[in-house]
Image (cartoon, rainbow, N blue to C red; front, side):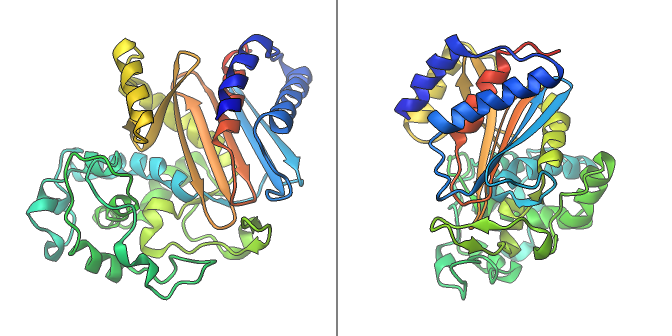
Length: 352
């Protein structure tokens, strides 16, 4: 972390402005290589390869570092699934004629509702303000394997666990359980799979994104020990961590979703700066539509990271500025700092 802040200062003074065309690509690749080599702490003995995608105005640029990675490969998003599910949730609410203030009991089965759940809203579920646990207490007792930990966790088991969970509406607690409950909301609009195709995949022609992608199409991932790891099957936890996608699709998704976040982005004034510092110290964060907020170079940046047994994803972007970065590694370790450092560099460039 010390190196991270030191480098923010370094690049503030030393970043080379990007130029259009071939020169822009060459300069950008050189800058990214230097960040990876000297600053981001990427250990290629543990993480075989890293792919960096940049959205800069009307341009998209993708580079591979370390072990060559297929730019058309499909990867597990892990928790980066959440902000995209938050966007889909808004579309589902619109279809149902509901707002984010609707109670969770409007879509949860009657057998699962109690007075505590009645006070929980969809807004609170999306922004981790329902006081729910990260994972069910018994997640470690199910017949899972170390390489595919959530495969046995069915909707039936999730329902049984929800009966034993008593949320605290308004209390921040990062929660996979909260997003998992949205399964029942999407059942109201035909299921999360078909709804994702209708609202996102087909309109944007996303050919590398989906929930039920065969294992053979998933890029090879590696664990912390460097060994090959099979894909995860997230079952009932899929709305929290089960989406798969590729670099080109992710850059397209950022470009598509980002403008809708502009009206929701708070003003970065002294009060918010103070709040962000307080939140970061307490290891909680300001969340909007499933994205975490952080201040960088006097700008609000939206970001999220995700990790599975074999992949790590980091996304950072500036809403409305058409500037964003996606970092994908084919190892379980990754670098949020790398995406933020590259975004800082791109943010100072002059978009052509």
